[in-house]
Amino acid sequence: VSLFGNIDFPSYAHTFLWETAYRQAASELPEDLPDTGAMAHFFADIHTAYVSGRMDTVIWEDAVFQSWKDQSALTYAYLQSLFNDGFQNHTETTFSIDR
Image (cartoon, rainbow, N blue to C red):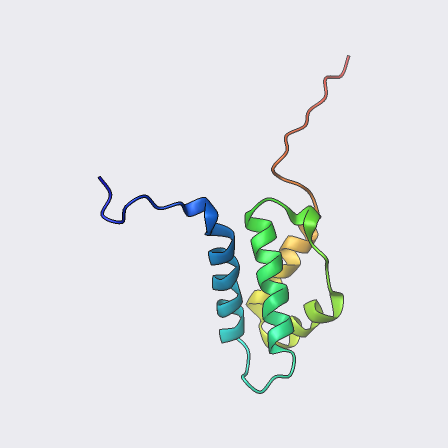
């Protein structure tokens, strides 16, 4: 018996993750920065795709990415590491057998 009833986590997990990433990113940026919304949105999209294993769905915005370089070295390094990993679908497993 659950104290919270029957929770359907899959129905809200993606939205919860995205909104949490957005709030985290926005909190790292100055309030008066004109690009705060775009930068937080970009971070949330990238982070959510990465955690979901679906970097192949990402639309990489280089100008927004570069804006992070000037604002947060840690977030920029995180985004750079995701970029360097490549835009792969990590939810699929493929293999080949060499003869």
